[in-house]
Structures are given as structure tokens and as C-alpha cells.
Image (cartoon, rainbow over all chains, first blue to last red; front, top):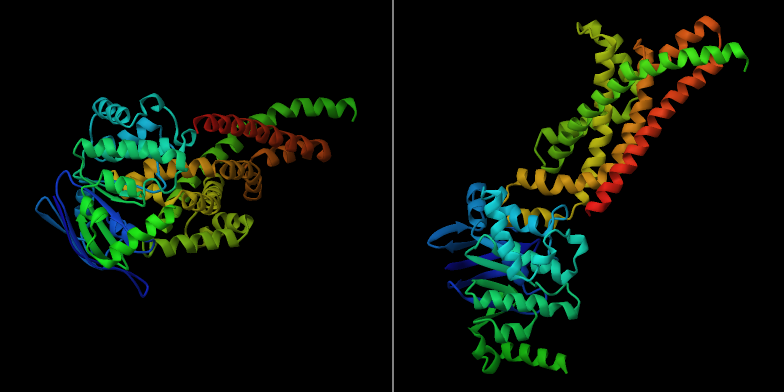
Length: 247
Length: 220
């Protein structure tokens, strides 16, 4: 379980996150929605120490981490509990698909190569990329790269995987394969926090939805309530906008 | 060209090649290896933004790039003895050539490392790597692929720069050609022959560069 408490972050004078708190239970799939610039991505980046928050805490399995000032050692330990899937995949360009997945196990977790490869192959199988195990990222399509990136994030069985708009950089016909993999992960009980614009995914796969705007959470609901009977005017307007946009 | 000159060229060629093998190539190899190590360190302290070391690195690059190598050779070989540091010619040449390679290549390597997307470092962190691990395993290998052609250029440049060591009495190809020519006065032909020996070394290095580039291409 992760409890996120009072995250604040400004860039220059621009306050991107204003006191954001929420909780992620084990096995939860949370979709974070909201217009561009609402702070969704910054939130995930702060929670992974890719940005240093101005304030806030993340309580992970009872241990509290200060998002503003933690020691390198604590950050390093904390990161072993999380997985991160980037919008633009960021597979290691000098490593094959399998090496991308096993690298963290071998280098950071000091696992034996054979054991890591066994796990890596299982992870690649799960995302349907076993046959491309020896391919370098430059030889893979965007959707394939993202599936390898998901395998890389899940292979260490982290407590939570953060997805930062995992399908936004993909051609429309490639988003399906990535969303399918994510749905399978969710069904397996993986704890996931997903920043996304994919409403179908949020509605059908997520347990809960968080709507952000202007650096605050404006509504947090089960996904069923959010999509059928949103409480706030802002959420209604957001859903209106989406539906309007789709026609 | 008459028969006598031809005879002399044929006789002197093995001598020049031997000099290349014994002096020019070791001088190049040692200086380049040391230089690349210096370049990596210089680039890394700038990228990791380590205080003091970063300024020192900048200062070093500024001095070396801003002064002629001939001046540097003279300072080390003829100048340092006046403050009590006496080095023989070959080590002096190695010091100056490595420092020069280090300064120029540090900029090449720094640029190449900065050309690797920042997300690669973030992704390394997110699979649990530390900064040194990410650098050694992910960033630098990719940077080296990008830096390989300009670094090969520097190596080929270095082969020819070793001829400057002539000025501090290292008996390299130029000095050897000079010595042989001094007996027969066939300067024109012997200097051409010295040039040919350099040309052969550089051509071989170009072939090696191409072969390695083809192999790297297949891996990507």
C-alpha cells in the first residue's frame, strides 16, 4: 500500500502541484485523468524522485519517504519498490529486448544471470514479446517497445507500477496491443497508477479514477461512479468535453 | 628519379617502417589510451557537475586547446628542467600528446554523452541503478557509438601530431628521414617517403574504423 501525502511542486513561479494526497491499495488500478498541464505527469515524476517535490511524503508499506529531501540511499531503496513506464518508452538503446528486462535484476538487484533471464523471458512472454527477445529497440515498433518497457517495469515485481501516458506517443493502431497488456497486468492483480487519456481503459480497467486540474485533485471516485454519476461540476464538464470531442 | 635514389629509397623504407613500429605507433597508442581516459574523466566531472573538479576540468581544456602543442612540448621538455623537473624526450612527448587528446576528446565525449536522451538515465534509475551504474552500462556505451567517428578522427590526427616530437629530439619517422637524407642530400624524396609511411598508417586505421563502424551498425 502507498499513501501519498501533501505533494507540492512549483516550476519557477508556476505551482504545478498544490497539496495532492491519495492512497493506493494493493492490487488497485488507479487512472489519473485531467487536461494537459494539470500536473498528472509531474505527480508521477515526483513520486519516483525523477523530480524533487517542494514538499510531500510517500508512505510505502509503512515506511515514510520525504519527497523533498531523502538521502540517495533512501531514494535508491524506494525505487526498487516501483516500476515506471515512460510515455516515450526509453528502452536502453544498447541492449536487446531481453537485456532491457534483465538489466535491473542483474545490476541493481545482483541476481544471477540465469535466474534473471528466466524471469525476463517470463515477463517478455506475458507481454507477447518472447519472439523478439534478441531484437534491439531500434528494430521494434513503438507498441513493441512499450510492451518491452512494461515487461522491464514489472519483472522485479514492484509494489506499484507508474504509467506516464503509456499510449500517447503511439500511432492509434498500436495503442490496442499496449492497452491489452496493461489490462492483463491489472487482471493479475498488479498495483498500477496510470496517467492516461484513454477513457475506455479508465472506465473498463481502472478501479478508481482521480481527476486532476490545476494541480489539485478535483474528484476521486470508483470508476463506475465517475463515469456514470460524477459528483462535481468539473468532472461533469470534463466528461462532456470528452464525449463532445469524440463525436 | 635515378637508380641511385631508387636504391636509397628501397633501403631506407624498412628503416622508416621500423621507426614507425618502435616509436610512432607506441607513442600514438600510449598517448591515445591515456588521453581517452583523461577525456572520460574530464567529461564526467563536468556532466556530474562535481564542484571544483568541474572548474579544474574547464581550465585544463581551456589551456590545452588555447596553446600550440609545439609550445607545450617546449615547456615540458626544455622549460620544466629549470624548476627541477627533468624528463627525457619520449615521456615528455607522451605527457603533451595525452593531455592534448584528453582536452579535445573530452569535448567530443561530453557532447556524445549529452546527446543520449535524458530519459535513458531516468529509466536506469527506475530499474534501480545508481548514477555510476547507469553511466557505465547504459549512457557511456551509447555515447561511445556516437563518439566513435570523431574519436577515430582524433586518433588519425594524433598519428601525424607525433611528428612534432621531432622538435624535442624524439627519433620518430621525421627525424629518421632527416638523418638518412642528411647523408645523401635527397631531402625531397626522403620527406616524401616519410609522408608515405604516415599515409600507410592512417589508411590502415581508416580501414579498421570502417570495419568497426560496420559491426556497430549491425548491432543497432
